[in-house]
Image (cartoon, rainbow, N blue to C red; front, side):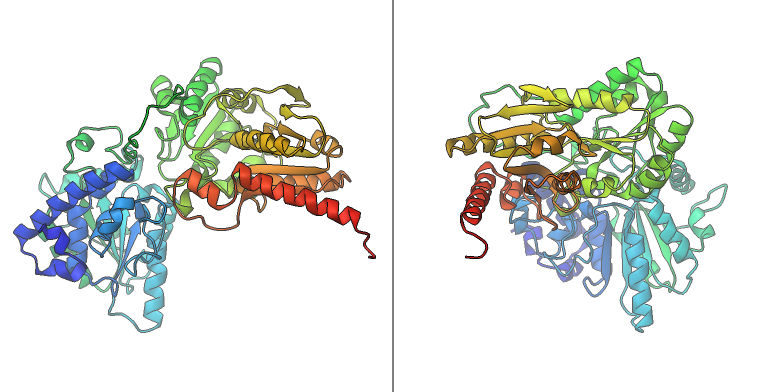
Length: 606
């Protein structure tokens, strides 16, 4: 029997000898590579924290002691050591383990953060609450990557913790020199100098730094750097930190992707994320289409060739958001600010005030963080900034925190902001150019994860809106947002089979609502809106309000995502769960039409 199979909880680790720990570490790495390559997920970060996680669970008694992970994608080893080894066969699949820490899975998971730089705030609050309750026997440990330290929230917490010398919080700085790509900025340079100050061997002694140690200057005790792949050395540093009744930083140096040659040799991202192995089966009949991200990246390079004022920005996600090619072609016009979306948006405002046209590319879920800056720094000043939101809508396997389903609700409140949603690759190219050409204020462009699929041609164009289908009869007007155009066309086909005439319209620019849409809607019995976004504050809600403001009494039924955190699963599984399939939509529409007909046939006084 493999040693790993004998471990059902952290207590089992404490009986292992150093040689056995080495064997367990090797077994964990082999299991990670095999399981994660099959399911897809965050591999590089977890390969790098094997020994660190072993040491943490040998020194601290979880869940009595609290381990907080920033971010939660580096918890695969932690899951294996807390009784969840069998769940890795369905990692990130419906009914299987989450790819992040999950309170529903285990008492050892206390927070579910997948947005970086938050754990130190949690740790500060938890330690303060325990101090108020007189509970000082249980440790609060926050494992924070050097990439997370590029986020402002982390430094707000460090600033406060440094001002509370009697509050015991253990900050394990997992320094592998990168987030998705190499860590940027002055903090990264400072950490490099700390590592160099200890020489080639990482020893648990305060490192020499010509300008002083920043953590110590903030009032925090500092220990390290420590070799994060030496279990005994990490345990020694953690035990010393536990005996310190004050905030302390334990600087642990690890190697992302350690133990897997493919990751170690990949200088681009150290296999931060690996894709799921393809499902065996017959070859696809159609030619694969490019990913939304790659279409955006290619077109932005073409735009920048024509527009020397275009500058591209991102927050530690240069390759994932499609800016790698742009960065290679225009390095002087490419800015990566690290995990600092708020700063990126304020920086974009400054660039626009200086005459540039910034294109800020973020995952839709992370764009939520920059709403205040978009509102007060960009829109208030009518800055021509283009916000590009990748992974908008249901992303599926990354779970609740990564679905891009809140941006429309938040951004529609921003005065002067125009929001576009392309339905296919050609429309993405067109709308990107229209957005960058708009100089009267900010624009936003949102598109999903995955392949673009074949283009969806328009039959006609009316007042800037594309008419995709126009069946005889004016029973239902279907208004679709972006890639939901395909769902709209499928639903129209099913409605036709029931003798219901449907017109499918893609407004292209979904906010503000095209005023001509109300004029068109007045001629239909029902308006149906389809969006891969939350219904609360989404496009459907805006269409309904626009019709009401225009005095149009055509009822509106919006189909979208519920006001809920959606569990992980494939995109198709998640959409089916919430009723965003053609049969489900058509069934609801037929019921609405039948109810309306019955209501008309029955006088209100009968």
